[in-house]
Length: 352
Ligand code: KG4
Ligand code: ZN
View 1 (cartoon, rainbow, N blue to C red):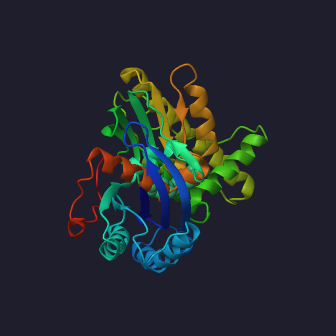
View 2: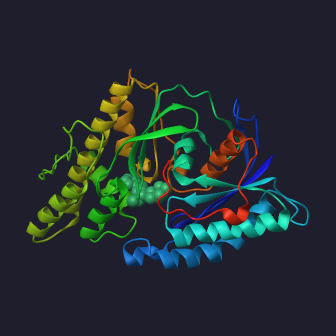
View 3: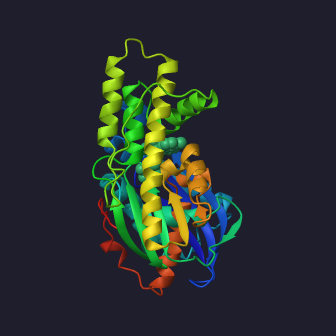
């Protein structure tokens, strides 16, 4: 079946069309088109401005859809797809509504069902996706652990069987990506700060130079699997306040120590959870999973413990391809039973 997927939960607008088959036993996908519009207007506000993001989604969606249908060579006069998957949470509600209302209008026009899809399930399953061509979701070895690290979430999710999730740890304050963005802002680095902080840290690491700064590794030795990044962020702020001239060399040194602190904490807790639950698969996904240091260190740390599956960099960030995969699998699980499109509601704090 052909599936159109729509993502508008935060500041990226995505529209993807895939051919999906194989049901839950061997789900496989061919990407016909994958469109993403990255909203750059938020850089000037130092973070995502929900109402501006909503307006951008409203502008982007019809343009992306037109491009997508053209690229996939589909005729809009007939029913071009069989199913629409749309993110209904978690995320910014005004933004989520834009995607939902757009999906509802298309569903009515074409007479197709809508499967409301959880953005976080999308991030998990994105680990098995490819941004072009064809791919099959392999038989996953359970128990599976997933470290979801993004701008809004830092969670450890345990999964003992397909599409069943239990959150076993989460951040008590800031998400890891949010901490990257806030530290960037303190140093006058534009939003989104994660990639830029990571680049600064890499520069310092490449010089083989240790950082003269020392920041805490928060909640490293607590018995739970929770995280906290707010104290670390405050330590960075105090360090910056003591510096007379924050030049590039100082920024790189701070970035290195900050990145090391975040990555060490994430790995420590993930490893503890992996040992306790004897996991057979580890997935690391969400925007922060684009971080090179995290990717390298997590893979090293899990050698001999479990295979580490991390999405390609394009698929770590928000995208609609992952919504298409998760949507198809939910549709199969529910054997095609979907809600009345009118009853689909944006759910900002939707849980897994
Ligand atoms: O998943 P995502 O695109 O959106 C959310 O659902 O939040 O994640 C965006 C977050 C931002 O906080 C961004 O700074 C962070 O991911 N990020 C990174 C890197 N690339 C993106 N953080 C650290 N290192 C990176 N290379
Ligand atoms: Zn996300």
